Image 1 (cartoon, rainbow, N blue to C red):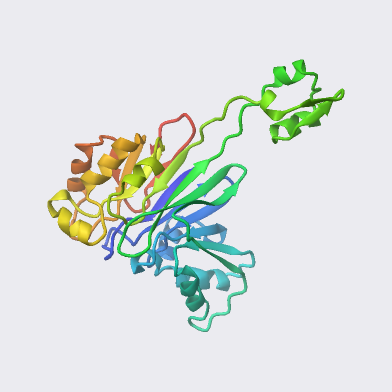
Image 2 (cartoon, rainbow, N blue to C red; image 1 turned 120 degrees about the vertical axis):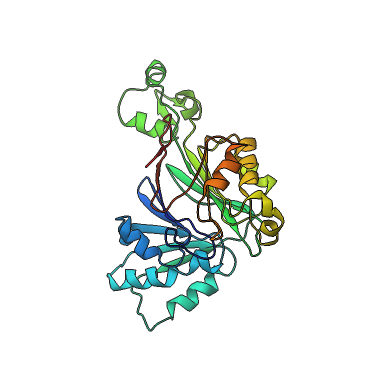
Length: 308
């Protein structure tokens, strides 16, 4: 799994930080998390083809997380896209996309499939090797955190299968796919020849939110937690009023959730340097870094997380 931060600023972008957006490459799909203003320019700088984007997941409908959508949608049309684009988001995303479709007299020659999330906690996408979950958070507008988790199939116990009379060949594949087979009038069930469940890598992206106890369970044992930390604790009251988290509280969540690494993001433009927030978080959770635009993170099973 590979993640590239395209934007790490909060409401007002800076010379060094664009509005929120993250590209995720996993399995056979390319995912965009949030789409702040100028995201398509950031995609070009990151040398990612926008035509490869399969799905866009929007945390909430504040401008710094959605204003890049019209440009990307129209640019994909100009480039001749024909395959569908999936867009997920909270209540209101259907109405937003309806307006975008009719903005600027642009003809869109591909389907935009909009998925409006209504459940507080749900699996919203799944294929055989990964799934995406959404969890309602608490901001000034409806907001969701997302978890992307790899699904690893249990190890196939080849010797045990042979001992049960299953000949090597197509029947092995059926058992690995979770289907029972019949050998000499005897039914062999998959659980007889599969090992225990295997943990896949997973990461969680908080969106904008005040600190939530529910995030601790949602991010439990994650390889990576990407949590907003817009301010430092000296202005915690202002942070909470605006629906945000301070660095210290993001670190407390990471520690309680037992995550491997915490990356904090969504920096207020009142700070010229992220160091005060990193120092504050590291007092609680040492394995913390602040996201930078174009930072790339590689998460692989049983390997330390790599940051470039």
